[in-house]
Image 1 (cartoon, one colour):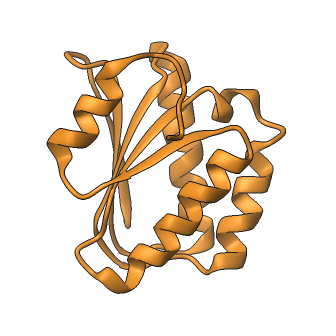
Image 2: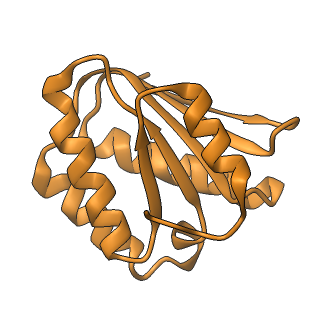
Length: 130
């Protein structure tokens, strides 16, 4: 499975770890799985660890999924911190994803270090794309 999702009850963060090749269907499943966990536990913060990705979804796929967020109130309430993949070739796609999410009212930020991502998630419950 190219993703797993868990809840850290100490920090109230849903963590999704991605690895290998992430297809369109698997990304949609992962995002929905994170949303379901967040709803079940009343959590609004998600850490998406993309450091293990080797293949990211296409730009068109990312745009279609981000567009779907526009009509999904529960997805827009989540504050997402994304850890960049080790492959710099995939960074452009995650930067594109970050911009798409922010332009559609969903909070997302990219980080190269886990500690910085966790600090940003713990700063505030108020969404911010900057």
